[in-house]
Length: 112
Length: 114
Image 1 (cartoon, rainbow over the protein chains, first blue to last red):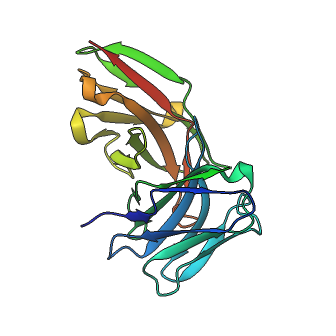
Image 2: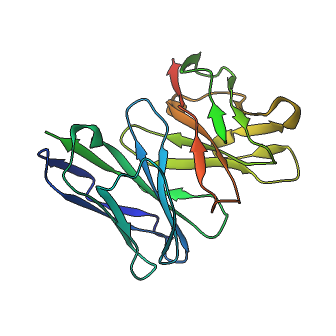
């Protein structure tokens, strides 16, 4: 069990640029989740995959956000035309079915 | 809709003192309940979970929590706090209906004084 890995750990970009984050879940986990966490708040659910299928998306996930998990293993989260309000920690978690979710250390996004 | 309330934004305790962090949830059926801990700049680490059965659950690092259905609560406790316990604590409720999506509280920040 090598844990959930997220890259990069930090991303600084200018407003309007596109960014992509990667998440490598625990290898045997079939479910993968993306959350967003802002300062002083708990994580907020964005989207979830079971294997390669994206089964649910939050209203927080605007049209500028897209997530993929093409082979049911790693996942990417892309934000297009970033805005100031996108600054946050983006957390990935994985689980085996309904077992507890294991979280990565997150990617902190800062928009200049 | 499911929701989680952590009434205490910040708690300060002395090292060696006991600790109780409050968590109330709103959900129609029996939820899955969790406590996670987060150190600055890190992800969340699972402390303990409740799915069913014994309402008093033991977790890592000497933590325990008790599920009280009548009060819709799942409070976290530790009999003797260590300085290394200083962190942010999150209560979460999960459901089986929508792929175990988690709803998190806003967290309780714990400060431990020597």
